[in-house]
Image (cartoon, rainbow, N blue to C red; front, side, top):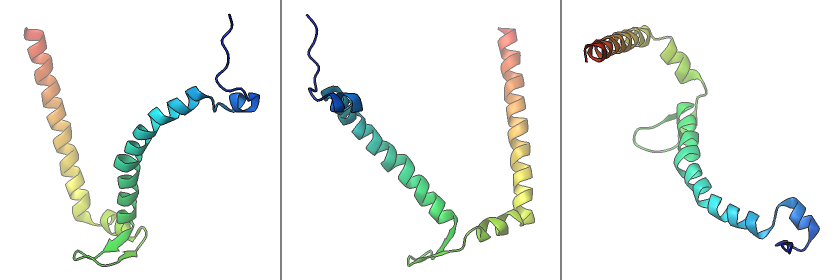
Length: 107
């Protein structure tokens, strides 16, 4: 015996608004809300903060565009700290891999 479709209107069935589609949407909505609240909203705030200048004591933010990035990227101290960071990362990774390989082959 063939199953009766959930939605009797063929246009609604074709558009995917059957009872199963609504149920799936109801299950997906909490996850989508969590994704928006804990990922997209903070990412948008971080993007706004990166192109604005804010007072440390509150008040309004002033849009400065990429001026902050230009200032940071032209600072020689920033380039020095990047060089030190990458050197540290390279040698730390190399030593950890070498010790791991040494211990793995000795076992």
